Image 1 (tube, helix red, strand yellow):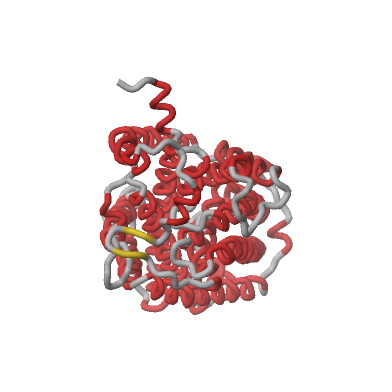
Image 2 (cartoon, one colour):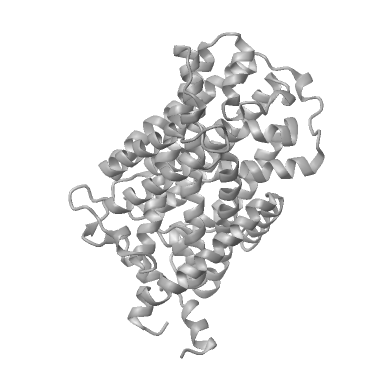
Length: 477
């Protein structure tokens, strides 16, 4: 029978950084291909991020903060920036597919890495399900503007939101799975095209909305005070989920040490500028009290009010369809690669690390993830998904900040292609900022997150604790 001390030593065992880096790309039955350059990596992060908050969340955040939702986006961006700087350092030091899971394994120990990976499952899988729900709303808006009909709510919304089974959400998930099975390079190419389309559509929105810019709509700028801004910032933080997607491509990047940090920071800059511009022009063009109804398609509603015509709204809805499909594709990619790394470490079943010899992609992994996400998207309402996703993400982001500090102390000799500026202030502020926003998320999300974590710990002790490669190798660490 193991003593408490021996169990404690085993669950906090760390995996040597050199070993993590050396096994990069290797899976059961083959290796991942290194095909992604800086542009593709940046667009993967932009693709995973841009669209989620603006096309889906903005309409539900404006009633909380009023026109000050713009400030909420900036506040959330600053919090994300602190984490992004920490991500950039660790991505340049440990350029592998596991993202913050692998960083935690190298710095904080196996059980912390497991909890982080478990939270990343929540972040990635649930966020894909959430934006898939929003995709169906814009698809309906597009059908209404162009063809004059909409799908019945019973097949276009999940239970609890007027529907029975959300068919459009399932369709977009299956479309993303099809692309991922074609190969990482092919998926990245399609994603770049989709990202350019959605940036163009959002710039079009800003230009049109600016023609109806009304300063009176911004007069009562902070109707609910700082508390309203804080609550909105916690909600729209969901909009920044995905900037870390580049870090999950560490084993398929051609020059990961140089390109991963740049891709992470560039993507965050791009999406922040667009978010602020869209939020400002939207609330200046339409009074904030008119947001809330049909919130998932709020931008299309703004254009319809401004122009009095249907074609701008139809164009924006088309852009949203492309945009959200890009988010689904990019985030599903990240989810499969994190599970790939966890499987390689023995913490989850081996099926997740098996690579197809022809396409050099984890086929079983992709199919399992697609099936799970499709079920979530079909049956779970959007609001419950977004807050829960933000909770898991904030926790994982906070761990990255701690990981930077620990790795600097334990391994100052490691080669780092990027150094977090103002160390240790920046990672500390990142941890505190994440904790602050967690406080402002709803109680339901907090309670559900605790339950999710407890379930994760049970799974770890029943499976991963004895099956991890470190446990089987029994090598002193």
